Length: 507
Ligand code: GLU
Image 1: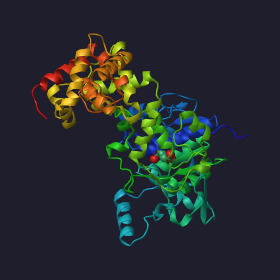
Image 2: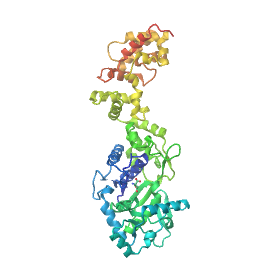
Image 3: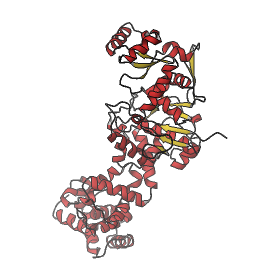
Image 4: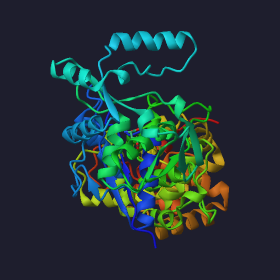
């Protein structure tokens, strides 16, 4: 049996949690849960100018909303902390110093201008920009002297020393198979910048080694960094390298990478729109992975039970909103009514239909309202609009719907509605009461089927379409008795108002 894996999600807190990164977090989480391993959260905040604590907080909120809790890391603690790179500078500096001592790294005194000029010249000549190695040949004593004199320097990795005679570095990958990179294409890279902060390729290896990470699961964009990182592992004397898995890129429907600037590419957008988190999670899992069972709707538990890297694809995945929406509506329809109520309340407050403190009574009613629509709502943000006709009933406004108008002035339909209104007593329209009244109207008018029910729907709701009446009407009736910010008109009130608004109108 293999040892329990230790995996990590290592985001940089420089913006909102992008769906691509959320998918990376998810695959790490799934792998850890599947194999009863440990999922770590490490914050890679070495880009001081772009990182912020606010982004870090929101990132953690988004992960928690998705249900991707971590076992160790920022906010959770653990034996390998601190888990924020900005708090680990001493560790990187100590490792860099060891590499300097061992000749696996050297101080580079080149000024930023000189380096930039060199890079520009290489670019102009159409060559890859690789450091020339100028400072590698400075004799050790001279370098020491210059350091002691206080000359500024960065620490560069000595690629040739670490690679030995190997012409290429092999990077075994669980998704891509074995990928080889020629050493000649790897220039001596900076591991510690002049300001004493580590570069990504260095910090990530120091941390993954110290945190005993067994599987590095991340986006494809890091595949080309892997040979550098493997060299650093070797230089640091790490005995067992982690296994790597590079996940395919996520593209938009236009084939272009999902832009970070696009609102709909951030987890927070889906959260604010009231998507069920289990739906987004399910959809993200299908971006680059296909379940052996062939199901498309999978619960968190099913994902954990079925996930593995042998079914992760190398081909880019397409983020297709309509597909997500179809899946999300199916998830929505399966949610317990208490969850629907909570999500509905959030959206009703957000859109100003409800006041902030929602009583338990109103909350329960919201659950029943949301249930009417659940199977066709991918996101709860659509509920206020779908149910607007309940809150905003006004006879004149209803008449803007040509179908409503036509029905109300049609003599046959009008006869049905007149009988209906006469038969509506003071009691509330429960489902059985509605059936009884509809029966009475049928007997008295001799109308049946659509000719009966369509005018009844229009009269009692003020709208020409909507959820099934036996379910909808009791919700309208209950709503009309609740102390809501916007009072809901009862069915009888609607019917009477519509009749009088169309009095004397002709077809
Ligand atoms: N901070 C890096 C990123 O967000 C982590 C990459 C890695 O997982 O090694 O891209």
